[in-house]
Image 1 (tube, chains in turn brown, red):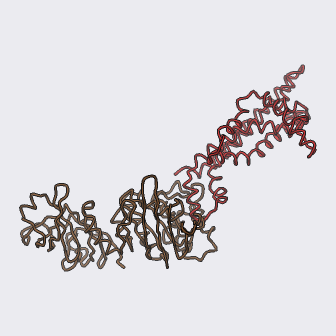
Image 2 (tube, rainbow over the protein chains, first blue to last red):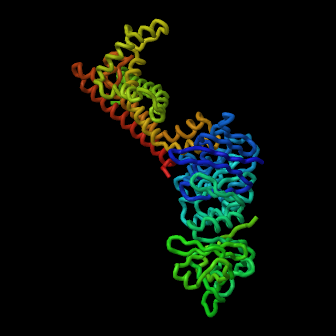
Length: 361
Length: 231
């Protein structure tokens, strides 16, 4: 199936120039605010008109400026979940869900009403109106409504942006569930890297209106850890829970040859996880740490040292994973650190509190 | 008190008939123009809006006189209608309805335009992404969301029509059974000796009708708003 988006346009003084190849499953568009992510999906939906464009979704050409093709919004067959949900205030939840279903009843059905309602737990909301729904409930309805239009492509524009952390975690679980039955490609716009790594089958990095990198999740994690080191100071590593609910509330996660002990009782055995390690939480030792309270130390190689903002950023290689550690220049000099040296990265179990479940495909 | 004379019953009936006709016939046009003024930009837009609002600021007698000049038997449109359609507004209840419609139209269009301006077009955009074409978006999203303004505009126009006096009396005079409404009948009774009692009865009736209409529109308004509170 061919899904190609190629857009060249200028919005006031901002230039967008991208060629994107969409993959199956959830494609995350990641980048800082103002990178042009929303403008791109608005072009795909037909809400914005690009100066030069070629958009092919599900083998159908929606836009081709060379051939003068521009399919209007309502004929594009693209489900759009807006950041602000946009449920119709005058219609009940049921009628909101049916709005698109009725308009598209002739299409081949990929998503059935009952299935969508059960999957998103909407049944108890059906007779209510948008105004007395919580933010998370509204977004669930918005996702259901978009799926019931039987789209060829699902667009989600930061659907979690207006929710608090608990609601975010809850909605993410629903989106993961949706992903399991998703037979169409989806685009998920986000500026949160952890959201991106949880949901993405494929990640597209954007910056200043250009596509910097596209790759599957593992490639994207590597790219993120290595290349964006000056802006983002966290590292993400894949692992698997090998011992859960140990004494003292600890859990062990296998990372490569070693394992990482974290303080958490919410993880289950054999779960695949992505662990976030903050660069400022790492202590570097050039000898094997001894008589130290910290439960974790990883044997790493110093791949590179970068100086930025008066600090030394060590890029460490740990069994082909990249971990970043931030030191003051004084510490850097004290240890006499050199590229290629071996060192131990010490991480307190208590400092690892961002471990997210993922189902690695 | 309930024992109304034939003349009084006719005046009440005519008042309601004229006011309803004026409001109902104006409604589609007011929705169309309200949408146009709220959403589109075009040449002389401000001029057209001012022109439609003119009856609001002109003395009603002037509006009535202009109607007489235009739609009267010798008026240039009146002549045409009589010649080709054998139809005239002059001294007919339809003429009274026309006068009322023109007087109430600015109020109606004002309320409708304001409520359409208030609608966030993002809802319409969402409907389009779901496969609705322009007409369907208008019918299923824009109109229902503008409903409070439409009801308000309708009741304002209806109230204005019910109370209309100056333009009506100038344009179609005060003919019992044809163009005599509550207002003109009350005025008429006050001009004849011993007419005060009749005038008072009609006054009470018109107060009753007006209050009923206001309560009804409040009830309708409430019902619409109940499910439509902005999120």
